[in-house]
Length: 321
Image 1 (spheres, rainbow, N blue to C red):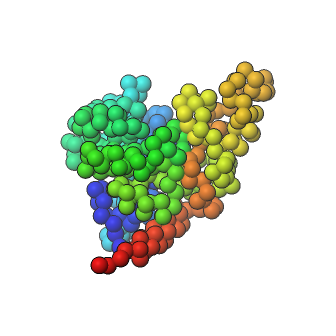
Image 2 (cartoon, helix red, strand yellow):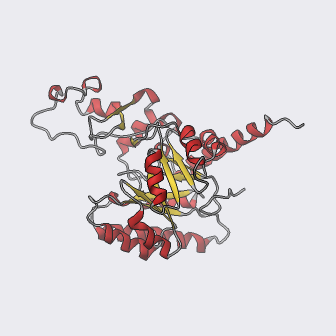
Image 3 (cartoon, one colour):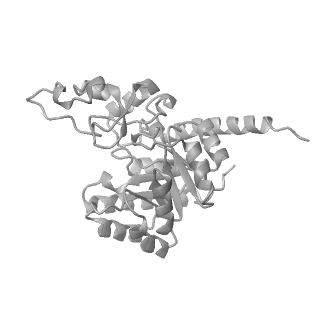
């Protein structure tokens, strides 16, 4: 049965989170065809011509899916747009947003204000990516329609608040759309977040090993093989606290126990330093949920079974008076 969300009916209230160097057109299309929201960050392509091609691929693919089966439940798609001043192509990115009209634009690393006029102009929603209550208040004051709350347990550049505490605090001041993410990778976790007051759940790490993701095969397999004990949150790699897979650090010659003394890292002096995100792999606390490198549909189907089981459990705990 379809689930009502602020973004339209969906198979599950889940967004395949926009992940740097992981989310591409194939992953977005597979997620939408599976009935959830698909998304990608615009920095995944360096040239504006490539971004144009990606967005054309997504819109054409979704149109073809709807034409092939008008009764199919196709999820919405979203673009994750960096609005920080360091994005020197923000005007070009927004021009493509206006051209292709993604139903949802998720702003990150800056105020949502630059995107609001463009997105509202065609009836889309602007969701601001935040990690704290002060940032949430600023985003709402700037005109954001909703919030994407990156919480503790998220992969890559992570948050610090419990997703449940974050939702509760936000619901004290805001009744609009809330997306929450952070260590949620299975259907039971999705059900818990929705029960706590979220409208949609970011699921990232579980989709890294999707067949359709653009992550390197080594990254995919490492997520499948990893457990929560294989993660390390540190600012030593990128300058900002992020959640990394320790096996990728070890392979690159970095001692996870010695990150406080970078001068003692034992790199081969004849080799280039390991590339963040490409050779040093990020993941969140949902690593234990992945079974194999498999299609998005298989991941969503397993998540749906877990979600339904969790909802049945909750219903069974109720006592009639």
